Length: 246
Image 1 (cartoon, rainbow, N blue to C red):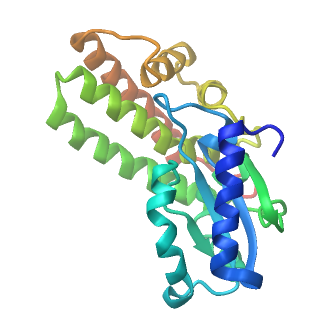
Image 2 (image 1 turned 30 degrees about the vertical axis):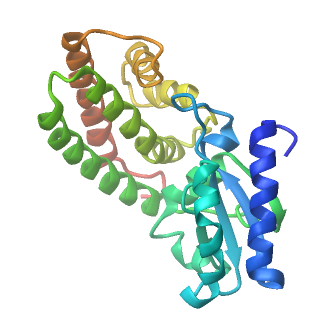
């Protein structure tokens, strides 16, 4: 955990003590993933995401954790994922992007490294990429109609959706046998190069999402329009993708 910030290490250690009280010997692993594991600040704060691997994740076994939920929320911990080794094994074909995203940047806080040796099939990656990007584009267009002309609203939508698109970007790079960068900006630039997107624009988009530039409402609207165009282009490329095995 040496590379983690002091704040994140403190939160992680306290979280482990909490879940140990809840599960005892049934606790197999606690893994930190997401922005806190990458060391990325999101609008002045860092989301803290944990995957907790246990032998049994039935509601009755999870119930003792309810006493810690409010404390976790105060520390910026999002709802932890309580999963079993069997769930991981049986879900790689359904949720390859989610597990790839975790694997791209994580820290084992305690227990076994359940992500290290995970492998994914191209056909599963491609199918989820297509489903995710098309679904997210539908939601982007729908939300845009509600906040058109609202600079703050569009910036917030851009930041939230870019974070959600990380899954697709990582999957798209994996299909090209390209390394998946840990940092968001590097990820955006890599997917732009591999799929012939506008790399300079993707850098500008990241700056907008992070609040590093503050265009007026008209310019923000224009940038959002370009954003959707670039994601449409990526969607079409994924749609016609054929793996080397096909």
